[in-house]
Amino acid sequence: VAAGSAAALVAPAATLAQTAKTTRRAARTPKSTAPSASRAEIEKQKQYVAQTLKAIREFPLENRDEPAFVFRPIKAGRARKGR
Amino acid sequence: MVGDDVLFLSVTELSREIRARRLSPVELTHSYLRRIKWFNERLNAFTTVTAELALEQARAAEREIQAGRWRGPLHGVPYGAKDLLATATAPTTWGAAPCRTQTFGRDATVIRKLREAGAVLLGKCAMIEFAGGLGYRFANASLDGPSRNPWGTDRWTGGSSSGSGAAVAAGLCGFAIGTETWGSILCPSAFCGVTGVRPTYGRVSRAGAMVCSYTFDKIGPLARSAEDCAAVLQAIAGPDPGDASASNEPLRLAGRVPRPISKLRAALVKMDYSKGGQPEAGAAFDAAVAELRAMGMRLTDATLPAIPAAEAAGLLITAEALSAFEPFYRDGRVKGLRDVYAPHQPEINAAATGADLVKAWRIRVKAQEAMAEFFSRFDVLVTPNFLSVAPPVTQDLYEALPYGDPVGAFGNLCGLPSVGLPCGFGRARMPVGFQVMGAPYDEATILDVAEAWQKRTGFHRERPPLRESPATAR
Image (cartoon, rainbow over all chains, first blue to last red; front, side, top):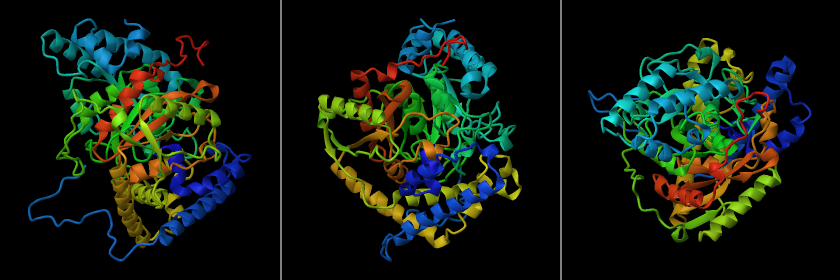
């Protein structure tokens, strides 16, 4: 996962620019991050996840819109190989 | 020993010299190993150097070629492999401190295919821990610290295929193998000024590769030209009983007749550089678009479908990564990672429900259908590959790269192929790139565009200002 994409995993794109503004002064290396600062960051990331979930939940889909994966029964004696 | 001019040759050029017996694979391998010795401490491109194996493979290649048994364009060409691909004779660290001594005793399918093609494994390339699947905020979220950019060693290479990008850019190997879940081939390609191909999902077997995300991971080449990427991709692609997702869709890149780019319908997806991008990078992209138009490409402004692709991709990747790395949470090894927030990811993402995941899967189909319609109107999509140059290695990456990646979100959510190409320089004379994305399994068309671009331009032939004296190196 690329860096910007890693950020997007926890923050919808629209919030990333705002994050940059608010963290510019507070940027620090992980080793110097105090526990309380870590807790604040964890809470911030939880908010980003909430925004991601909001976007997913609000996207309209019909009942018949199926997921991308296909379930296939496996015949007897035929184990499917993984990676 | 051969000189820098040879070490920076493309795979195609190296291969021609090797086949004609004007260049010894053994001498070439010795020379790359010497260059690695010189620069690796500064760049952190390789986690493990497999010198003995490399020389053994090089000697075997030389014997075969001298006997008239030439295997193909990779025969005798040295390469590096991202350190999440299992190798029988070297550790495979996944870039993570808890896995520093991990071994598998077998080769990943990609490693085996490259061995069978006669390529020479120089070593394992550094990477972001767990390929960034558990998130990371600083470039030092890697086993031995950040990989450093050959174009400016105070800057990062991008990730998660960090060492692969550095090794190719610095002329430490002929080509490298990287992987992409979301951005991990294209990002180092952009930041290091090299060419990288993210193949269609399923194009290359992932058997023996670390899983970051079961339904997003792709393996692809980083090299000094699109032609090189085509040669490597041809060698590693194909079905594999060891990976149920590996496709048997035919790939015929060698000897293909390229489609003239004037005949292609190209979508131009512009990005907003005002939200954290750099105007110099925007200027380089605009110049690239003007050049493509001068080459006869018909570019039409286009927009992406109104679907929350980034959110769906983000949720699915996070959920799959949390599942894939669950053993590290169970026994506490996750606390050994460099990123301080990785141990907290289950808590951070606890609000996601099973229904949310299923919804993301259903959104994924909508995105696929929308992109199928998109690629019924267009043959390729042209867009920037990152809106800024490589950031300093110590910078907070959330701050350094604050813009979204909507094209990457659709590309990876839908498993679409893309090629990253250098197109100029931005701030501090760091490389800038753009990308050409295509329809599933249509790597040939995006490589047609890439090869035409590189026949016309010389950005891919630029070399970083590395010197063998640390005192003069940047």
